Amino acid sequence: MSNTIKRGGFSSSFGVLAATLGSAVGLGNIWKFPSLTGANGGAGFLLIYLLATLVIGLPVMIAEITMGRAAKADPIGTLQKLSPKKSLPWWLVGAAGMLAAFLILSFYSEVVAWVFAYVFKAIGGSILSSDRHVTESAFGALIADPVQSLLWQWGVLAFIGAILLMGVTKGIEGITKKLMPVLFLLLLLLCAVSLTLPKVADGLAFLFKPDFSKITAGVILTAMGLAFFKLSLGMGTMMTYGSYFRDDQNIPATTVRVMLADLFVSMLAGIAIFPAVFTFGFAPSAGPSLVFITIPAVFSQIPGGQLLMIAFFALASVAATGAMLSMMEVPVVILHERWGMSRAKATLLTIAALMVLGSSCALTNSTMASFKLFGMNMFDLFDFASSNVLLPLGGILLALFVGWVWGRDNFQRALSNQGALHNAAVTGAVFFLLRYVSPLLILVVMLKGLGLF
Ligand code: TRP
Image (cartoon, rainbow, N blue to C red):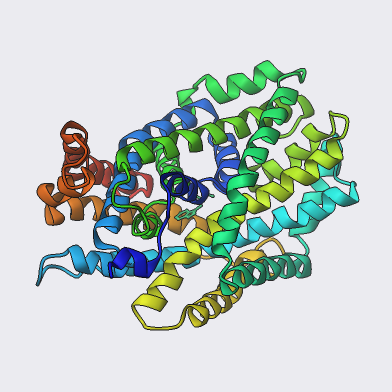
């Protein structure tokens, strides 16, 4: 029996696209993209993020998926299988991915917790206001309350754990596939409303008219980190999903579609948010709170806004759940396939570890507010260390692995579906990028951004 059937996999070409997109689209689009764009000066940041996505994100995504599909194993096993005998311990890249997964899930689960809490706040109705003091203090009160923050986060983790334990991941993917178009329509509606606000011109200028005076090495690193985070790269998620890909799937075509769709969702979120920021007097640099304070203000402008806002946060919860499941898949599949644990045990262990580690992020605006390492609270530190260090480092090593160890022949054969696709020009270009351009570019951006040279 072939490995594919035994391990399970995506059954249709549309299923592959939907699942991969399900991992990519998440709070990264609705929460991280707008807050980083706002905090880093707008259009200039956006432009660098687009460049990083094209020149670095796309080739690394193709590399990860191709490796996963060729080896059909968990990330550690994939690197072991594709390495020649007696080479360097490349499997460590998979192990580092597991560490990155824990760091990201720790703060991501807290943001998901805010989104879940906002579903209920929206039902209560008190946050629906265009008065910025109302929406700002509502969000401030939520994150400054240690008990609420922790309980919502543990609730989210228990919810995700239950989904995994019941083995209804497939069901969730089915639901995500059906509900995502609705989230998309709601975002379009929000954009339409936002475009009628008085200061729409200021909002759009902020988002689309670059001002390069705000661009520093640190900002460039943040933009590159966002590109990795957005496409779920550098920690084995896409490698794991690649291992579920069908052998006849056209990988370059699939990745380009996922990238474009993902960018489109982020753009919609930006267009929905920035005109409101200027109209209602919010600060674009509000950071992580930006979405939670502006979105209610936009909804307050339309009839039926409360119902739509409930729907918006409920759907954002669904999108976030899909992204979390894909991240969780990395430690769970490693503990299961490498260490021989049952899937149930691997899941419980992962959730338990996250409840402990994640609490340091949940309490970051209350009990542990003054607890800092490297000048950052735990929430910011985990975010920074994963997006700006571990994911890019994973990207460098994976690009080097494909370019110099796995090699051109293996890569091109795998990426052309053993020659069935006549795409030698594309695979050759991607290989060139991976061998020479991506590793060097990522390294320079990283070292400069971290102030190391
Ligand atoms: N891409 C997802 C988002 O934008 C988050 C995500 C899922 C992720 N899997 C990942 C980020 C793996 C980094 C690595 O919300």
